[in-house]
Image 1 (cartoon, rainbow, N blue to C red):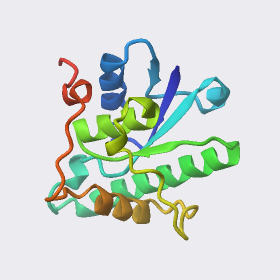
Image 2: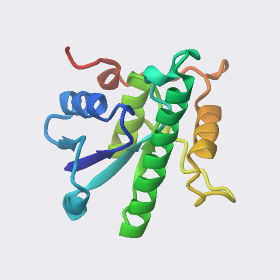
Image 3: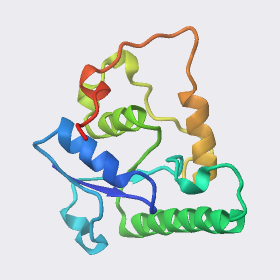
Length: 164
């Protein structure tokens, strides 16, 4: 399987490509694919904007520069979503930090490997097609918040990180 990992600069594409390749060596994970090669991709994952960058640090004298960088990430995210929509490509959006992001990507790519009790099904709501990244992030963080009453066994394959 050939998987394209798309996202704005600083959203963890390269980290996720290395982690996925380490866990699933029989597949190809492209972290900087040419958009013209979209017909060659089997799956597309779009990186969420929750990955920390240097611009996520507390406000500094360069906060105008930080705001510009954040705005640039959002603009690139919207551009990619628009391109995918116009190209008729389906895609999954991956959120989370570290192993959370890896598990989310693996669940999207290999749903047959996810135990039934961990599968939540697809959420359907009135804003399903709005593609607003801020709205999507708020929805995701609400759904992904740790639940005090539930303890799910971990996927041992997704718990480890690639060396280096």
